[in-house]
Length: 580
Image 1 (tube, helix red, strand yellow):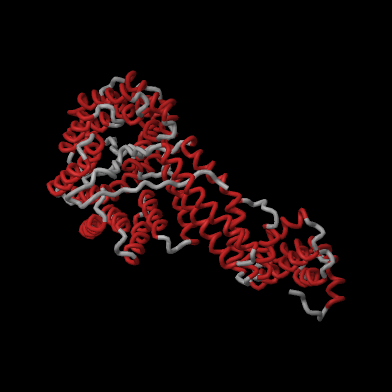
Image 2 (cartoon, one colour; image 1 turned 135 degrees about the vertical axis):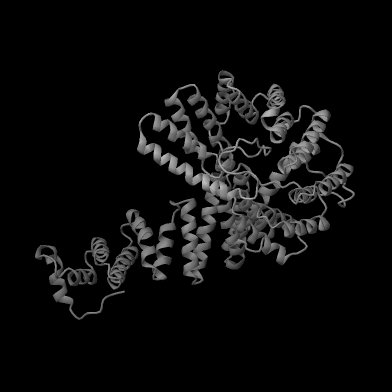
């Protein structure tokens, strides 16, 4: 069993106009006592173990219904935790996959479905997020988190009025920090900063006047297009605690968002101040390098960007700037290498408002200068396509099209590192054997109950977690053969016979599967595939008259040397029934 647990932090306070200070959860800094976290993880681990042990005990007692329920509960909870781990390090693609697998096992788990919706939203699949949240909001209209997740999703989709209604419902049901903050953000998006400011004021009264809460307010104002108010909030945060991570960076970013190049001097001072307190702050290094590059301080820019790239080697934005810098220094080869790396590292072309478009454009210019006209034209073509996509995506946003170097205030939006993913991967490895065993047992019980197609699905999932599990291939092949799914039966039976060559049933089942597959291929008009399957069947069971008969019949038009081994068999069993 596994020792890593998924912990959850509760968030609640009083009414929307009277916020309780005791349980506030600040989005920038979440402080959890070490002992409380350990106890939470141990409790969650015990919860998993309870389901797994209960399933095995019920199966041993031949209470298959209870065993099935407990195996599904174990798998759903384990997969939910894996999804949370992946989402927690920004790997939302893997997280969504785990969530979907868990939902197949526990489709009525509202918490699971809402976590799935949030991960879909983070991945950018807003329609999936909307559908998932709507299911919960419709079936359980008193679930505040359903309204919160749905409201945020609708806001991202531009369905602002409906979003505001759902967020108001969330606050009315459970007026906590997260709900109130989301509602204020919605008012900002609806160009109603006064209403947002009123909500923030109520939060201050209930939660206390802290640096962290002003950081949140500043981020909300700045990201919504009100950087002047954001600047004031960040200044308040610094006045209360100048050492809060990201406070000076955020003030510098707000300067750039509000005043552009005119504020470069003030912004650079804040980025340097952030680096004095937190030398490894990649975002500050990036923005400082960008400013210095624009001011043609190439040596200074190279120092900042090179250091940032060492700290965050999978960040494509850094290599785009490094490519621009090398090009400005006249180092074409180095510039091309950096730009190519930026393109390769860009997993999502919409990242930073399609910033990869500029990498393709600059590559095209470098290639044209070096005489590679065909390669240059390909890069220009890609750049044009991305520019059109960027314009379409940003219509109505005021962003225009093309690459953007607007500083981000979302300090969680960093690239994935292999060392960041390592704990999640280790967690999955620790749970993998128990997951495989659970799926295998579910498959065996489903097959015993005659539900062969479900059994096949369980065995397929078993193979993903532990393809060498003892007995898997036999169970899988037998279920598929019994369901007359001959295509599915061939691979596991073939693997099983490699180590159990004396198993007469498995050999007969494999040869029969290949025979029936051959006949189905013939019906579909795939003669070559049919012959290949029949010949493979003849190797598995050379004594099978049925397979030799079919081969002789189908290869009759072929040259004599290719059919002599089957013709005598055909004569001997003409008129006999072919085994199935």
